[in-house]
Image (cartoon, rainbow, N blue to C red; front, top):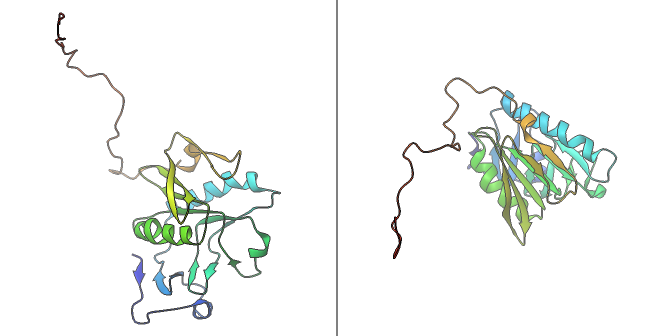
Length: 213
């Protein structure tokens, strides 16, 4: 589970650079968060499918597509490693890290990171001007697309397994989500889905004023 380090109230970029590379941490407002355990195979499969789906669109364009692990330094006290992100300003791309806010950030949530991604990361990315944010829930299949309005996000649209996601920021960027969510469910994992059907109870007679039922 993502845990906050309490014994030292504030950390910064200089501290972060001295930490072991094999350990994954994020810093938000100077507070350090341990991002272990390592991602699951399902998490990594979704990240890989999204990268494969997005890469052709960004090939040869000014905006560059990246995936974790790669440090994104938003400030001296805010350092994160999004699962996938797009940077459109080349001056932000440094030899060792990204210095500044991406245009698009994509996070694939897991039980241990969902509150961190959904609350802390969304607020942080909005505060630093990330224009578009995708929050991907592996199961039940869901992608929530948020767009920046002022200093906070609004939900532009939610997509599920059979949908094609269309980016509100990048014209022509479309992702068929069936391939992204093409993984088998574990025994007992499938939930009962709401489906279209026909009631067995027949029609109900309605008495209208001044008329016949």
